[in-house]
Structure formats: structure tokens, C-alpha cells
Amino acid sequence: MIRKLCILLVEDEEAIRTGLIDVLVFHGYDVDSAATGPDGLKKALTGKFDLILLDIMLPGMDGYEICNRIRAEDRNQPIIMLTAKTSDDEIVKGLKLGADDYVPKPFSIQELVLRIEAVLRRSQAGQEMARSLHVGGLDIDTENLSARKDGEEIAFTKREIGVLSYLAQNSDRAVSREELLSKVWGYARNLDIETRTVDIHIAKLRRKIETDNKTPEWLVTVRGAGYRLIVER
Ligand code: CA
Image (tube, rainbow, N blue to C red; front, side, top):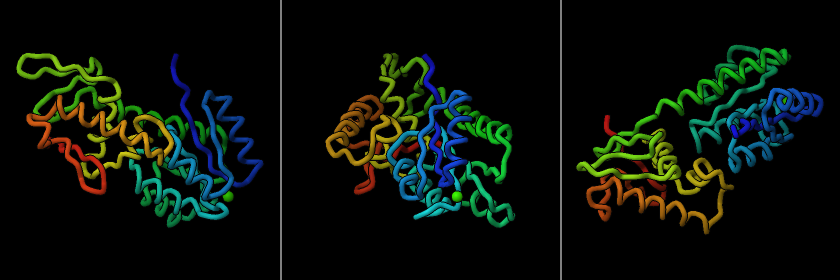
């Protein structure tokens, strides 16, 4: 069964919020919502969403701040800003902070749905592009979950490929165990016990991709920050 795409809607005006939820559900999406800035940020950082629809003027914390905080944790999260502010400055500010698109209010439902579909298409195309991963001299086929090394086949689990893919997409920085749990496993953040799960997967991956898993060259530990994948250019 195909998983329904899940959208987080952060919007304080109740009439707009309930109206949009109805429309999005009608179009086949799962929807979670928040009515305040802090609640929206919390859900954005603890849940796993295919897209976040983010109003700008919100009680407690504005949409710019939320966008900024989400981007600090995850630069791949698709975000569309809903903005009543239509001046170019405001739009540019949102896009600079990393929103994928903006939809000025008042918007037509049709236009909003088209923008949502476009952003989701782009982000899914990005995910599909990585059909093979080049790590540590290995060419890993992410569909067959395998690679060949010295004529031998090395099998990976889907989760291991998920971890490698996420690290490869973010290879310019270290990724924390909590972020991996949230983005690859879909768990809520800050479950201390669960971070061991990540370490176990990293150890298994090192045995597969490293020449010497005691001194990793590719899947390295960045002290106090997490794990980073070194990708060949
Ligand atoms: Ca508002």
C-alpha cells in the first residue's frame, strides 16, 4: 500500500486552518496541524512530514523564526510559506531562510494545491535521484540494497541504506543521532535509549564500507556533533 503523504499545517486562524485541513484531506493527504508558533516548531522538529505549510504571522513565534530553526536541523524539509505579506522584501526573506516556495494570501485553493504538488514532486525527484551511492570505493545499488567488493556481494538493509542516503544528502556537515532517528526512523526526538540503535547501525555500516572499521575514513564520528559521511567528489 502506498503511504499517504503527510503535511503539517501551522496556521493560527481557525477558519483558514479547518478549511485547509478539509481541502488537504480531500486531496488525499494526511494532515497534522498547529495553531501557535511554538507548537508548530515542536511538531515540525519531532514529527516526520513530507511538507510543512507555514503561516508567517503566528502567536508566540513567527513563521520566519520557525523556518530558520527547521533549516538549522534539516535542510531537506520541504516548506511552503503562507504569507499575507506580499511585498518582495518579505517574500525574499522567506525564501532566503530556506522556504521552498511561498503562496500569498488570499490564495485560491487550486493554486495552493498546485504549489504543494510541485514542491512534493521536486523533493521526491531528489530522493529518487540517489539510486546509487558511492561510498568508500563502493558503488551501492540503493534499489537492490547491495554492493560488490572484491567480487563479493555485500547486502545492506533498507534502514542502513536510509542512514547512508540521509548522511550523503547532508555530507557537508555532521548529523546528530537524534536527527537520524527523527528523519530516517521517524521517531520522536530525545529518546535517549534509542540513540543506541543509531550507533549499532553505524557500527554495522562501518564493517561493510570501511577498510578498517576501527579507524573509519568514510563514516566518521564528529565529537559532540554526530556522524558525517565523507563523499567523493
Ligand atoms: Ca496568521
